[in-house]
Image (cartoon, rainbow, N blue to C red; front, top):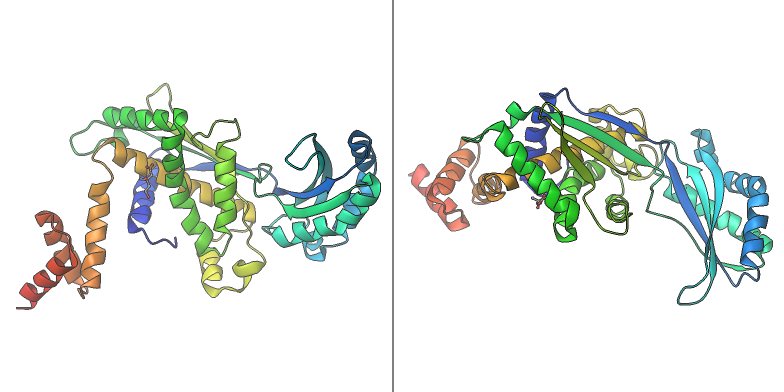
Length: 349
Ligand code: MEV
């Protein structure tokens, strides 16, 4: 996980242990379908054009598929064509053609954009309009990854609080995010805290993931929590998360960056879908860790211990000294570079 906030890694690890007590994460995912968009304007008869475009779908798909040998080689390719009509916009009516593309183990951005550019002249010819934008959509809502986690109530007991009390607090935390966009934004940031570091470590496009996640969170028209938490008949906490995850394991930085290659090797993933499923596990774990902390002791306690270690390291502590300096600063509630230096000086006599 590549991220500047050490508590994210600690939190996700802690939550993963809680989930292990309930049998671990279970995951699934859709086919890796992405959407490329071609914008057609000044179309004289939009409904008629829609009809003609759909009637010539096979020709459009063949032209798209002639563009990307690598995607076809992977077993992917353009699969479908859809047409959306917007009768009004600030500039007037437009017809938006979606090319649905199976990206297999590639993230697919380059192939999708090439395909959109390639089919645009044909779409202009069929529709009698003019093509402007030809680009993938980052709202990859046909390329979803899902995860479920069950946490036995007893596993949540900590610091004098019963498992049931902690579970109740977590349910209130989730409920807050379910109804309030101000909270949902931060709650979803906590989910992405687990996902982005895996995306960065494997050389994938974290901005695409962020954009898709937030748009998906607003798909009902009201921005809400990406995860859902419930309690089952036994009182266990059951969390589910479904979200777009456009990742690849071939091409781009994933292929050439040695650190990304090593991260993929460590994960042992065989497909982009498998990587996407690992990402949602990390996301749900991060979400659980954040809610547990927020609903109990607050987020700062865990943060401060790790923050103190960073301050100790920056002050020059090494080896066992790091923990010793951090421990003393936390106990004194004085976590500052100057104090770290003083403690180090005292230790070294
Ligand atoms: C901080 O990086 C993430 C949290 O704000 C997430 C949340 O509030 O759920 C703790």
